[in-house]
Length: 385
Image (cartoon, rainbow, N blue to C red; front, side, top):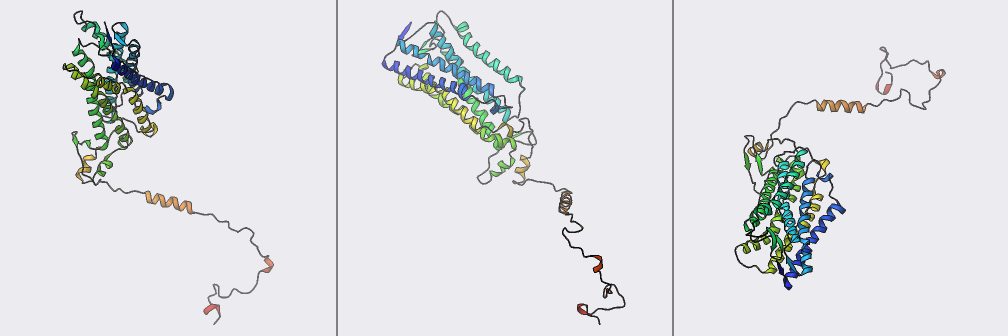
């Protein structure tokens, strides 16, 4: 079975393949040339998750670059190459969805719940998620494929993917994961930003409260932030661009797909344009990684993520922005003055250097009048009366 390209389809598929190639080269540049620094994500366990996300982008890009083969043939046809492209594309697409969500959940634990997982947890998560991706791709044709409906992976439009004979699998084994990841990631990142800004706070009674202050009083939120909040607020604001960018990239191609699922015909130009945008995801992720890496605080300046928060935000709000404090007796002033006195002591020599001492023969035998003599009285200016 084969499908011949017309002029516009061949050009559109070539542009799509080029977008995949751009993403592939961008990821390879980041990993092999620029090299993401492990030190940047010290004590966060995010390095493995970021590498897995980029690995999913590589699979996604390879599946798209394979379109060059169809461009050279001026047609797309069924076979092992077509099935391989469909499987690789699905693995890359759901891989990006899964790893975007994993990163969002991990950052939520770090910055919102203040839970730093054990070192074994990231390794376990990486193995489980990649195994899940593999099972979804393999079990599709192994379990769902029937002889009546034909091959699971095959010609789907102008390239190969899950065929139109399995519409529910297209939706629930790919698009569902994509929207779930984008939606939950956006919610989690928004909660993190509200927490570190101070809008979302946990009171002494254990209940969460959402507060928004009018302009001119937002300084109260700044006062209530702890060291970790201030260190990670800027970083959290940058990380929220991941689900935003992912959603923006995902929406156009999803709209065209659902129009097709509804039985309406979508112009190939629109399909090709949305596919080009979607396949630039790897390139955009690389830009975000570089941008976020520059905004990430130095690991040495970050406190431990397990640091407990001080529960004083409720009292701050109740006091109208006045922070209560207690005055205690202190010997600090006495200690300071004592140290200052010691430092001010200067030992002078008993006899200045180069002092001329007269010989003993120069001493006079005259009486010392006016000094300690009770019988003598002295008038003004030492004149005897």
